[in-house]
Amino acid sequence: MSASPRTKPVPEPSEISLPFWEAARRGELRIQRCDDCGQRWWIPKAACPRCLSEAYRWERVSGRGTLYSWSAVHRPADPEAFGDEIPYLVAIVRLEEGPHMLTRMTACEPEDLVKDMPVEVVFEQASDEITLYKFRPAPGAGGGDPA
Ligand SMILES: [Zn+2]
Image (cartoon, rainbow, N blue to C red; front, side, top):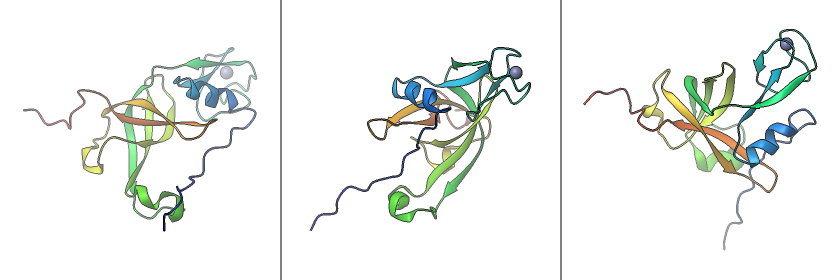
């Protein structure tokens, strides 16, 4: 008896967010930037949250940021899909360019995390269409423990 591979739910791009997911598939992190006032924002919206202009571009960002907040999930809302990953780390990262992103931390343990530690984006292919964006401690970030 062999269990079939689990199918995890993946994001379903909307008309507005589709350019983001297409960029992620190419290994690029892009967020919207207003053509009129320069504001950058996340999550994808049809208009600038500051001036309501509908003129914006998808600007590639560095993929670097700092850890703003996080939580270790021990009881996932969908245990069948994510039970094999617990505890997993849901985090809010503050991008170098300003906006905050809800994401997952990967390649680390809960005890490795320190507020404001440098992090960087990594991409993980989840399906033919969807490549997920996650963050990991930036190289050399250490745990803040001087030798
Ligand atoms: Zn604007």
